[in-house]
Image 1 (cartoon, rainbow, N blue to C red):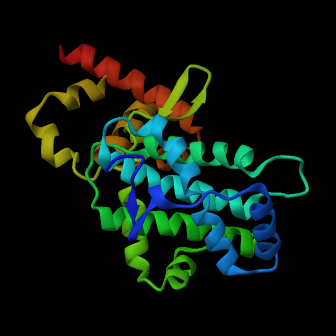
Image 2: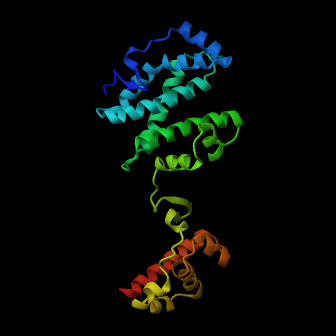
Image 3: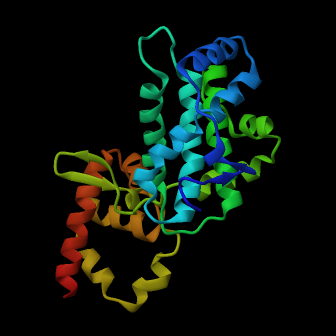
Length: 259
């Protein structure tokens, strides 16, 4: 697919018309009155703007250009829905940053995990519908409300949105207090590393016996009972940052003993 000749939804965008400023103004008058046909005509008349923007992102990858075109169209629609004609700004001046923002968000969130085109399409529709409902309801819409608006099962919407979510590293910092850093992995319970699975085969008990009572209790709760640092902090009535520091000190002491 060449960028100057994109076929999407059966329409060859190389043959799309360009709207004059007067035509745009007339269409906006109708759009403000709720004319959906005028809105569709305005979108169609600005698809060339989307094409001009995505060229800087697409490179030589036709599949990437296809995806970026759809994402850019979302930015265009957002610009149409949020454009304030009372401001002395041309529509294209307002729309281009919106389109670029959607493209950058897509490029940032895109990853090596391959997601089917149909699933991505549902996700894009859900994103647009979510923004539309947010504006309409003046609050964050629920997944069920998005699913009802699209006439799709709620599970399909959830799966589609999950498919384009950015994976997070277990070592992603989630909180810092001074020199104490809490990572995502610190919030995850470990139900497998219990005492009966690995302590019997190592000299860990001896190493633990060298810890003071509080450090011993923290290691026991964290690694033998599979509790998170938050749960441990609540149980022994100290801050999560303190739990993290004491846990690291205890593990360091145990590793030194076991060398």
